[in-house]
Length: 228
Image 1 (cartoon, rainbow, N blue to C red):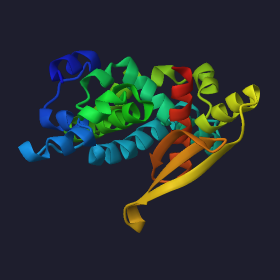
Image 2: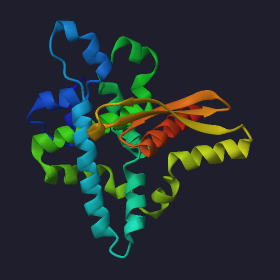
Image 3: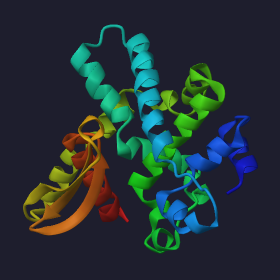
């Protein structure tokens, strides 16, 4: 990975470069390199970045739309921080080319997978928060994310489940079903793995801290495969 290039693309100056190296290290790479030394993956930074994004986006929407109701603010925030949105931001910045992947993940197209790109974007935000603080995160989002958050963009960013349902119904392709295939972690930090199936055939998989989040990510992956 080229950290100097990342600094150019993002318009940032990294202080603790190891944090950003970690942000772009997928679990598959860390696992393969375990025998050669410590290569921490980006999952903890992803966890932190998710929370930082929620806060920064919430504050922006609260200030930007003073007449918007609590329910509409919540739905709008969900569209901004959903997998499809975060993956598109990461793709525009070329984050995929910098991710350190294991050989298997590389061979199966992980570098362009929406769920992986969204996770990397969250991990990057987590690293930026630790490296430079919340104000720097806000400045970055003001350049990269917030200019895109307008009425037209929001209309296009329907939740992934709704989009997938629409595609299936319009094409009369069959019946969608969401299944929990795995539950990870202790009760206070539960992660769900959900598979979306079309007429019993798996077409997407997603992981989230709630069943709804995992379902959205599974639908996003299914849509991404459909569009490629």
